[in-house]
Image 1 (cartoon, one colour):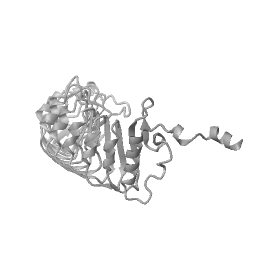
Image 2 (spheres, rainbow, N blue to C red; image 1 turned 90 degrees about the vertical axis):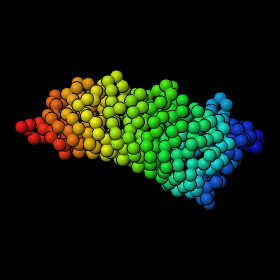
Image 3 (tube, helix red, strand yellow; image 1 turned 45 degrees about the horizontal axis):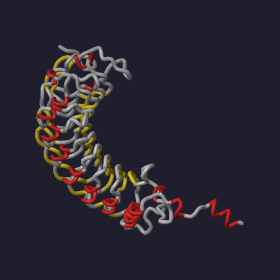
Image 4 (cartoon, one colour; image 1 turned 180 degrees about the vertical axis):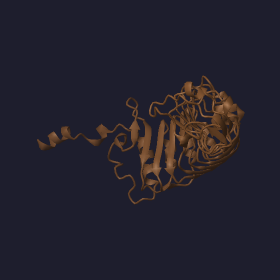
Length: 329
């Protein structure tokens, strides 16, 4: 009687298996690609791979559609076995400091990918050109790595790209002119290229885009960054600090959605337009270390600081004056 009861209480493994054999083989090959003695010990070949840590399967088809790994001990390169997860839509490899080498061409075979994140690793080499094969990609996040070289202009041909985050790398060269011509299907993109070694003038074509946020601080970029501003846009964050931008701030028009503005440590000149008070929802402001002149506008309507900004938002400009700085003469 006991074996009979055990049969129903603990059914045979094969009856519980949902994961497709090819997906399971790919995951186990991924596991054994690392040089650790026992990598990902919870990935037991005797269990359904749809139950593995970090693995997500489609509830209808049972194909693996998501793989999300966070590990400070897995050592090696990005396994090429990923190419066999042909239905993968989400790939996130995060906080893996022992992950080295370049992004393998196998990633370019995952044509169903919508979300690709490889962040906080020690991968190096270029941002690969083969990423343009990922025609369904909406989120490209390669921040906090050691990537170098230039940004591939053809990334701008991806029709659904909504987030481009290449921050905290060692990228060089200009922002591609093509980025100003992202397809209209890539609506309201977010761009973060901050903390790199980019140089050259800002492409005028970027004025064509209605970014949701722009962060390009701590590079060596130059030119007229006023292309990111404009009444009617929906941008919430503009952070362009610590570059070599030169433009007349007095001629800038603002979007109502703007919450964070940091233009510090540039060569921006002119006065502060009074419209910045009425036309924005600003809650963080840094205009320091520029060449601004004239009187600081009054009447700021700040949710978290009803008294207005203090001097740390304005100091070290050529001739700004008025509260909270020295009185105008």
